[in-house]
Image 1 (spheres, rainbow, N blue to C red):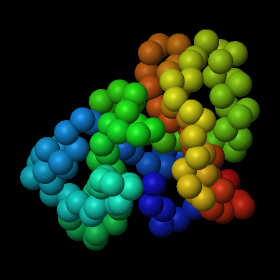
Image 2 (cartoon, one colour):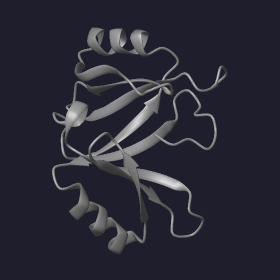
Image 3 (cartoon, helix red, strand yellow):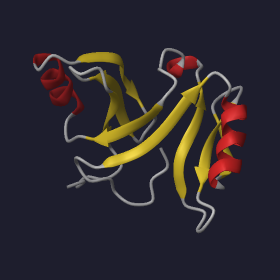
Image 4 (cartoon, one colour):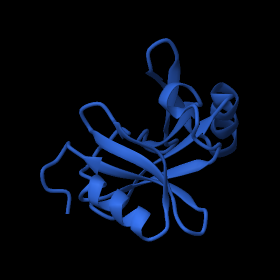
Length: 135
């Protein structure tokens, strides 16, 4: 989840597509929307940070359904920044949602969990450790 500015609480912070054929979908989006892929080493394989054709900014990720991501659904997954991942997970469960994956560490950048809301929609909740004030 490359960041160029602090993510605000409640903001959609990042978007990933996790699929079995990451190279094929990397190439698909490169040709369809003009993104330029940049490999991101994952320990034995690379996922891809997709860069904007206009300014080269990181705009999304295309990831392999491997390792921690092997059970994620093949869809665009938005990451929403929350103040406290643990508190948000508790609220999710209390209000009828489910935790599908995690919580997991995102290296030294924070933690995340993939949830399903009561309607069946899926997103990830992300708590950053990069900036002390994200509001």
